[in-house]
Length: 372
Image 1 (cartoon, rainbow, N blue to C red):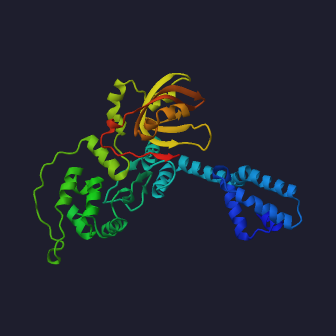
Image 2 (cartoon, rainbow, N blue to C red):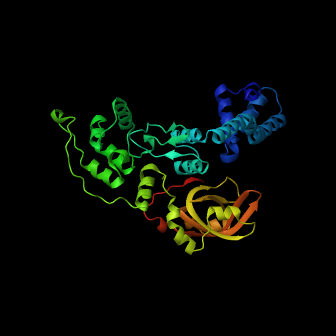
Image 3 (cartoon, helix red, strand yellow):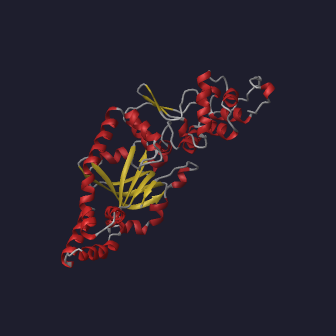
């Protein structure tokens, strides 16, 4: 940048814009607009056009190689620290990532699933103990009230403040002392965060529906009412509600409930794929959690599927992607027929055919992290 200022008469602002363009020129272009400015500025200061063009070409080369090289040391340090934390403090590492959402390639469901696979105990959202952020309880990770979609931060902070005064005795007591409106109460009930006060989800929803704002003269009064004997939700209903309100579930993975149907279609699990030999024909199904399309001319798309045993990495070459664009971009539950490619511990499935199996998910809300 100093070269542009001294040799071509760039201002500090122009030099900074040149720096920014260097970081992105290969992806989107942008350095071309500086070419003539550099050549003219250097000519005014006695440099030949040939020399000026040589300098410009060197700037192009530096933009391709030197910029990322200059950041490699700091990036390596960040990777090392992150790896250290994940290995030695996996609960704290997962909690920090959850508290920093939205960010990164992996959604909360994948972060929590990975932590649990590495031995971390993850405890559910609970109005009687959860803070706003996810917190540590010894070696365990407690999900915070921030995970509940639809719950306002102001309402959550009032819950924490009221709880510090004394424990909640009932859902009505919670609603009155934390001054929660219908929206906050419904979000908590639907997220299964009221279990300690009301029992299962259906009971919580019933109790929330009966909560009313009392006049000041009756503030703090309690009323004995007989609650109906509501049936508890099925496992499938609980999982769907978990994903709807929390974006994840601490119950079984959704595909565990579909495994019998998938097995009937001879679908392998991610664990089966990880143990399969190179070149084996395979068929695997999973929830799509990510799609990546590198900025190259090859047109390849990398898809990550997830089932109850873990993730499966799939490579979709351009010909398959062009032929099955609808399945590639639209499926939330995808089956892949292809071949296992293994190099050491790195395993992929090379897709030959894609099948959209999304209807099997029913009303389960899922969302992949896509970067095209």
